[in-house]
Image (tube, rainbow, N blue to C red; front, side, top):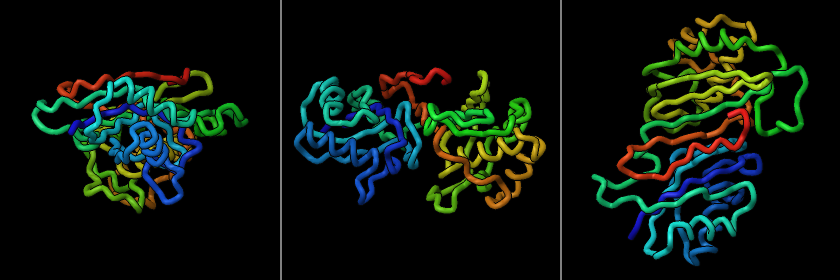
Length: 265
């Protein structure tokens, strides 16, 4: 039995999120159907982090177990032959069996990084529909950067946690939040050891409230401290959210790529 690891990229617009559903309109269902057609046997996958409907992935990490003997590049070309244009396997490798434990796409991860892309312009852009969150009021990026500093470090992030979140603990460690602006495009990059359900979109929504002048930067500290979801801003749209990178110890020898297929990332 071998444990194979895949790097998967997808456009989330057409899908009802990652996790399998009776409708079959999920990335996991689509990937596993393609793998079955290639391998001629059922294969169950496990991902690094489930994404919601409309959320994209530059590099989702997936593992599965198999006794099949296939060249690693065959898992890329073979599975991709049965995938739609919005989903692609970018790389495949066998997890080393002697690296001091068993690799797990979710539990072996040391950090996750997400991008959130905002289009800040008075008029929406049809070309960015589904690819960026739209904010028509002007945003002050410096105010947003100041507010984001209150979220760094280890905190109870209950104020940014969805009611249906299944995480055992709301305590997470935010390693970094970067906010860059290029013309009308603002990109927020958040890195943490792990994220709660809707945590990134809830944080983005609250940073927008600060950026448009409705709240001062220190409001983020107050929201974080009260641990009350009803006090923070509403969950922002999924359109501009991208799972960018899942980090692992170098001992796993994953051929990860920092491919940014969109010009503003």
